[in-house]
Image (tube, rainbow, N blue to C red; front, side):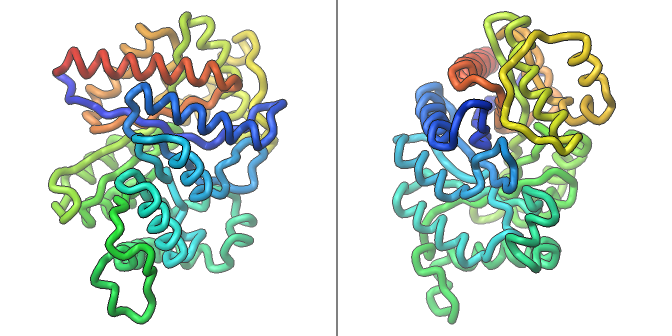
Length: 338
């Protein structure tokens, strides 16, 4: 089957490696975004997470402004803002401001998960559960605040009215697929960690899609973990840092990203665990030829419009190299399928 032309983008968590402070982590984030711009990536998204030693993207809109200021063309946005954590009015004001500062470059990806544990979610917003159940209504408020027609409303986000900031629906289950289809909005599925419902969610979204003012045809984005190196052995070594993050996630002992080590039988046993295996189902590790084959297979099965690559490894230079080689893979696939 011939593949469609596929855009490629980055999802970043401003991952914090052992031995690096936040200032250097944020500098690495900007440096990566600058390289991504040169490598032809469509967008650079930052994910909202809280109360984690190894994730620095808590103040997501602030980091988006930092990255947008330090780049020129690449789209910058949220992958995503967890809307139940926030007032829709404040998010509209923040992203309306960003949209005016960096015209036609800001994306607003919205999700309904907390991006943290229950206690922290309640500390962020005491009525979090109510807001999560009201996600469609909260989304409608965002749309209203950005609409020029809201000029006559009693409550306005004046800095957002008429500002062009595209909205994307993020999801890790089928529920969000129904909403994105009904609203006629682009849909991004978090298949880099929530793999179970990917194909079902894509089918629901495409089958139920209703054209809107912003989108005439369905637009599907999917997250994948990617680690590309010059050799398979080198890639597997870098993979051990991500495996350590996953172990910390399951055990509740979250540490900063640890330096890579030799890939051993113990790592293989961890990867064979059913829960880990399911979570990392769409993880492509190896040299360029190996990853290219894996990515081509994923694209053939899903026919997504855009891949969002996630590369959570220890060394910032190795991360840049991996993203460079992934860009080369995507360019080769698009050329072969032109």
